[in-house]
Length: 531
Image (cartoon, rainbow, N blue to C red; front, side, top):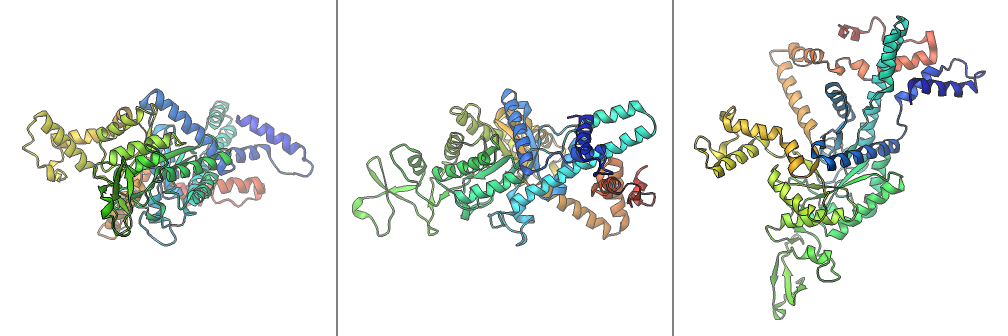
């Protein structure tokens, strides 16, 4: 809908009440409507689900069409990310938001910082989704508000050409609203609890929900030890619960990411129920680490299963957990992925212990033997030591090729002494192209970094504290922060504008006309940043 059409519609509505709606201007109404395009979270979920489905189809045609996101723990961080993307690339296409359960636990819980074990309040997750989209909607309102001011200035100057250019920019404005992949951990309880929380997340705007196959009350970060998985039927029930939530709320295109932690999870809490040999429960149990027992030597309290005419005792730990056989992780991951895609999931997430294209691609090839269009969401995790991992990968590749690596100590490749070396340059190039290469070779549709803004906030704060509280004093802030904001065109240097001051001024003028007491006058110190 064009700017002029929106004005015309508002004018018709006002015209019905023109005798009593004195002072209501159609153009002002049109501007407010365009600045608030999305009225509810469900509007956002439906809009972004369509985008994500189109992106998935584009990837199926060409893996160069992979998508990316960064994890954001606050609405302001998400807003600044999308403003930056629009500034540098001119479009938000293929760029999403990621909501990390780890960061919610560490930064948003009323209990204070918590480990990634699903101990934070479950309602914190939909609250953060709503917050992220509130800030993105405000970014739309701010950007359009500046265009409206440009339009008014062009009209006041009698510059019709400029006015038409600005109006075309308004008509072609691209929203900051993008898909969000939201982490529901292991569902925060049983399938009913997963369904209820999914609804809250979707109502807040989530078009994509990621759920993992760990036991809810034993949840661990995917990069830590002690992970415990559930039988497939339990996990599939939760996938269905999420799908029902999407369907109930009318978000038919909603996307489900099924995450398997089986590669690093060697434990299970349950022996799966089996109806017949070879069914999904039997396949799950086949990975258990068992000892064959003589019926005559069954001990008190032993739990036994039978297979192929043999009586087996699954190895049971003092924690009451059962362990899987060592070396079965990849097989379990592949089975997890196939069954998830066959039962309602749309995308996969395989949590790995290192960023290795060969390892990931090997599993995806096996999955695609059954599900040809299987696609992954992959965690480019800060838990990986990317520098060391890729230097070691290059070292190993060179060794296999027979290249002389005597100048390098594989165990100490993280050392600054190797920076700038041929090996480190090759490793850095592999890191640079990792996402592109993995999209092409390992079926990765979406690359994300779970915790980047957690680390950038810590790093930038450390740098500022070191300078400001040290010998540099105020220059530590001015040189390291403000001067860089000005020269790099960071919108936030005008923090009053970013917080909505100019939007408020516009509303004051709509509401009170010439009597409006506006904040953006000549005495506003933000005018110092106009030069």
